[in-house]
Length: 301
Image (cartoon, rainbow, N blue to C red):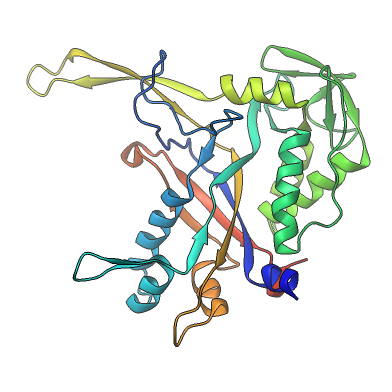
């Protein structure tokens, strides 16, 4: 009964970057002045749950949702400066697919076995596991989802400046189909685009590309009076590329009088999804994402 209750009360959420995504980690110590947030151990990109929760609150505040229900879900600061915790919980969003430049097929949705295994652990909490298993492969191999993958030329795959042997198996095909249905429900065109470019790399190769495959742009500040570059106003800014895919969990860990977990999840985790702006640099188009929800007793598969 406890496991069933967890499944009923938990949703999977997915972030699909429509534009480059910059959730900053402050000042960098290397040549990148404004790096993105990364996991401490793996050094893979992530988006903190606190950033997503704040953006969601702002989104629903501006969309005529009952203010009391918003306070119940996201928390409230009261008169004596104490705070009431919100009922809605969001974990950090971890990387699922990293868009990587490909010599053939333009780009790949790249992932790795350990990324898929971590994702499967979260999927179990929502009832979406579907007995998926990660493929096993060598460092010199890339597993694609089909024989007619857009990434393959002959029997080779070329990602960035790396050269791999192309392989394929049922596990990769199952993951490609599952993720395509989760990310692009009802959109056969984009499901096909995703499956034709889905690729599983070894864990070490994926880590290398996750560290080196982000966008790094040189930015300058213009002096208002002279209309020329201000002195010492050059900096380098990192962003996750468009088409990056991340995922996390959301659930309700408490119920307030007059409200239910189901009502909160239905109001703030809609099946139709949300379009949000997350992170910095909004005025130059950064951070526009699709946020999708699925899992639990009502929309689990």
